[in-house]
Every structure is written in C-alpha cells, then in structure tokens.
Length: 124
Image (cartoon, rainbow, N blue to C red; front, side, top):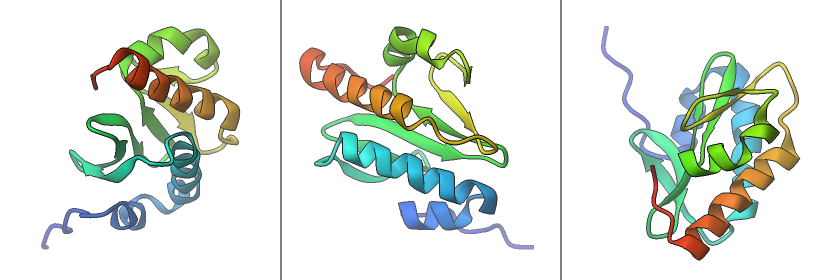
C-alpha cells in the first residue's frame, strides 16, 4: 500500500485531517488570519502556519483536538487563561467536543503578533 502524499497546501492539510477536526481547524485558522491579516500562510514542517519574516504561529489537527502553537513565551504569559485546556511548553490543545474559545484564541494570536512587532520575538 502506497503512503499518502504529504499535503503541500493548507487546503490539502485540512482535507487530509481527521474529518471531525476539519471544522474546528478552519475556525481556528480564520481567527488567526483576523489577528494577522497581512501574514503569509502555508505549510511549515508539514503544518499550517502564518508568518511575516518568521513564523507567528502554526496549528495542527488530531482526532480529538486541534493545537495552536504560538511560542513558549506566549504560552507562559497567558498560561493562567489557558487553565481549562491541556497546555505544553509550546502548544495549547482545544478539544473537538467543546466550542473553540474564540476570545482566548484571539488573545493568544494578538499577543503573539504584538510580541513579534514590539520585541522582535523569535519563533520557538
């Protein structure tokens, strides 16, 4: 059996994602695009990402959750606001069986964009 071809675009990534994750992934990406409307987008390391000269954030879809990868600095700065979600040093996971916390996602995204412009914050 041949391996599936790796996605080359965000649309292909979404199409290849678990069906139950696709709507939440689209919603997450829409919120990120609104927070960084002039950012370029595409795949980085196989995951959807938005960037200016360097990556702002990336996302990933799984069978039971979607992940947002802002930067460890943003995770640390907003960790108290993420207490209802599974958080790693680099990501926050949003379960598929609950509504996406739009305000929190927007806050994370805007904080990352601000950190990028005001502090020349690097990716990871």
